[in-house]
Structure formats: C-alpha cells, structure tokens
Length: 382
Image (spheres, rainbow, N blue to C red):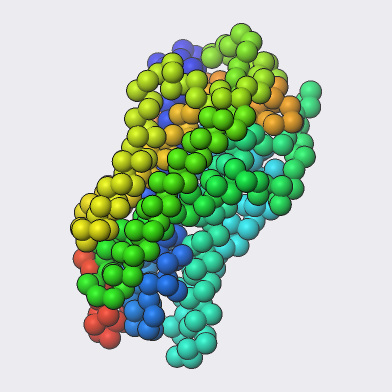
C-alpha cells in the first residue's frame, strides 16, 4: 500500500515528536520535580510547606502523562530503543520509578496526622521524589552521549554489559547535576508564579539564582567535555534512510568530537545551545528583578534549549553503543515499520491536540496563587 509520506520522512517526524514529548515532560512535570527538591529548604513552617505542596498539588498527576506518553512513543515508534534502554537501564529506571512512587504516597498521607515527625518524614520523601529522578534522568542522558555498554547479536538480541554504578561517570554526573540545576531553577520559577509573596518566594528566589548560575556553568563545562573529552560517534558506511530497520546494517565508529559535526553542517542548530544559555540568563535576571514572567519564561526556554542541544548534537543517533558501535541505534535503523509509524501519526494528530487543549483548560481554571490562608478554608488542599 502506498502511503502519503515516505519512510524516511515518517522516521524524522517521529524523532521530532519524541523530542517534543520529552520537552513537554520536562516543562510540566519538571517544575513539579524542582518544587519537590526545594520543599525542605524554601518552606520552614508546616503552613509554608503545605502551601508549597499545593502549588503543584492540583496538576502534578496530569503532568506525569507526558512521561507516560514519552515511554509509549518509544515503545511503539522505536522498539529497538525501548528494548535496549529499558532492559539495560533497568535498575536505574527502577530507582526513578521508586522515587516517583513516593510522590503520590507523600501527597496523600502527609497531612493525615498532625505529628511534626510524621509530616517531616513525608516532606523528605517528596524531596527524594523530586531530586532523585532529576539526577538520574540527567545521568541517563550523559550515558547516552557517552554511549551505552550494549551489543546486539546476529539475531538482534540485546546484551547489556554495564552496571548501575557504572552509569555514574564524571561526565554523566555533570549531566545529572545540570539536570538538577535546570529543574530546580524551573521549580523556583514556578514558585515565583504560584506562591504567595513572602518568605517562601524570597527563599525560592535565592535558590533559583544559585541554580541558574550552576546551570550556566555546568552547561558550559558539559559542552567543553563534549568538544574535547573524546565523545562522539559517526556513521561511516552507506546510509539507506528508507531501508528496513536493522541496526547491524549500519557501519558506525567512535569519533571524538563527532557530536559537533551537525553544528558545522547545519549552523541553524546552534540556536539550541544558545537558547539554553540565554534562557538561564533570562531566568537569572528574572530572579534578581523578582519578575515571575521573566523567571518562568527564562527557565522554560533554558529547558527547551538544553534538551534540544542533546538531540540535535546526536542526530541521527538515538542510542549509540560504546562496546560495539555497529550495534548503535539511529533514526534510520531502529524504528517500527512504515505502516506502523503512519497509523501512529494519524492517531497523534487526532489525540495530541485534545490533550493540549484539555491541559490548557485545566491550567486556566486552576490559575492563581496559592496562599496559606486558603489552607484553612479549602478542604480540597493537601
């Protein structure tokens, strides 16, 4: 059956859609993670902590939908990537999911008892639920840039040769700390939008300022490491962008500095790292000037720029292999079938706008600052 879009175009569209879903997750659930990581430090009294929790309490569940959509998109559009990453990074994913599971439990149980120790325990659980995923997601991205220690045999079975602690290398820790700084800045910016004026906002401004500075430094250090640290992979053989998916048909070799190739080939891609730096600077200025629109707009732009930088630097690679570059997964050799991608695209064009419209409506209805006074009058608050 002839389809309106060729195989290569559909692969490219789904690579872009995967990036959109990951960015949407970082922009929405990202500030939830940031607020959780900030909770024990920006709020000192029980009322302050309840107020901080309720700045995200009404929307965090909906924000997690983007995480599920991202995982579903990888499963359906990039089955090789799903199989290798979710099996190889199993313990890391288990760590992330365990931390994420703490969030709903903490939200529901924290205020069930008036005991300060009880509430403090769940507050620190919310901290773990925010900090650990932010760190591990960044570490995972760092390992993707380094190349994952897996290989495929002749039957395309995946074998992972790494360990959980082997994921925590100097470069991956830089990426992990950058992720934490980026999301803490985003969380602090969200508090400047949603929290009432007062001590909490001032403390959030202080932590947001530090996070913005660290994000700028770590992003620059990570960029230098990518340029001069021996990272990168390059396709060296013939490339069939419309061929059937089989990673072993692609000839790949490790090539230090290759992650910068796309910027020389397509100069417009430099807009991504520029946006990462510019957004963090705007967020920093917003914190200094106590401007919620500048702070949140800047943190959002920085998040988009940093994540886009990774994707554009690696294109067309999605998950390179450090132990056997021939097993590396790319946009052109790791996708589902032509028909599958087309059917999924039709479904996405129908349902994604509905998700966006519903999300926009929810935020419009729930817009407004959360105050400590509302905690005494609104029984629906945590």
